[in-house]
Length: 154
Image (cartoon, rainbow, N blue to C red; front, side, top):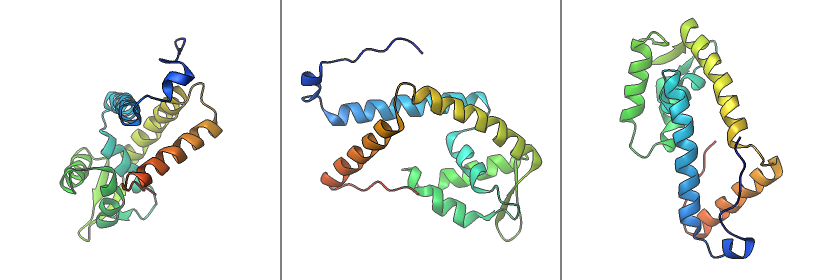
């Protein structure tokens, strides 16, 4: 990656607003991920859905939506739309009982996209140790708690 320099001295960083930096980090990372997924022909929620139905016997649609709803702030409708889009593309099937199963074509796309996702993670984490990453997440979780918010994903 390009040479990186910090925006401020350590002393000046202590007065920087966490809301701005947390938001800027989230927007940059999500944009980078979504742009790469779009090149593979998937939205981010579609990627999540494919990963939820990998088991041989698939998974109930209600369970998939229930698991993923916390990652979207717009309700269940978009997830149902993405499930239909994946089904229409032949990447998953849905039986009469609402059980979703990934197709061979869907599994191939998911596996190929998984390689891209691992590359993205390496790019995003470049120059950051696992310890720094864990500490950052813990600090952000504590700030969310301190502000009376809730953010918990499995």
